[in-house]
Image 1 (tube, helix red, strand yellow):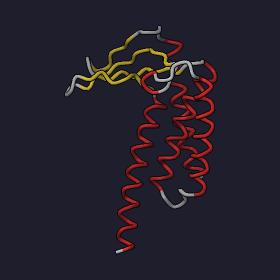
Image 2 (cartoon, rainbow, N blue to C red):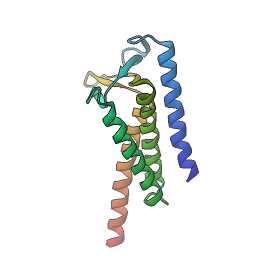
Image 3 (cartoon, helix red, strand yellow):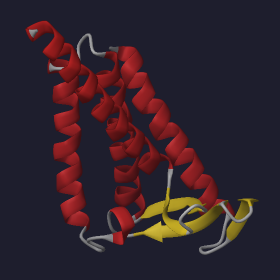
Image 4 (cartoon, rainbow, N blue to C red):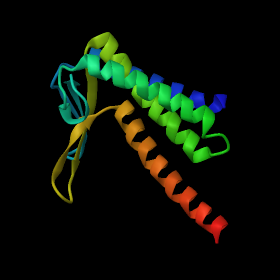
Length: 158
């Protein structure tokens, strides 16, 4: 069980270190191109949720995050035993939720810095950070776990 919590801690550490590096070494709005024009670092701040929704509603984020973190820990201990994908997904979600929560508590905003242009559809994806990536990957793994678990349960019934 501890190895899974280590995953959440690693996510939090990488998230906070990268945000600190951006916040202390880049001016707001400064861009460092990595792979022109598709990938760059762009110092940005977000006072809301995904895509800036609910900007300025910090009290709501505090309440929701505490509930989400409690739910993740509950499901990890009660439902995830013996389910590797489920455990990994929950710990990625936990690390991502806590990473952004720390920003909201300490900075009053979330530091975002990864800027991606998706060339096939010429879409400028919303700027994100390591915590956001962990949350997205965690949800994707959770969906995969649910699909695989459902297929396994159908085979047992047959």
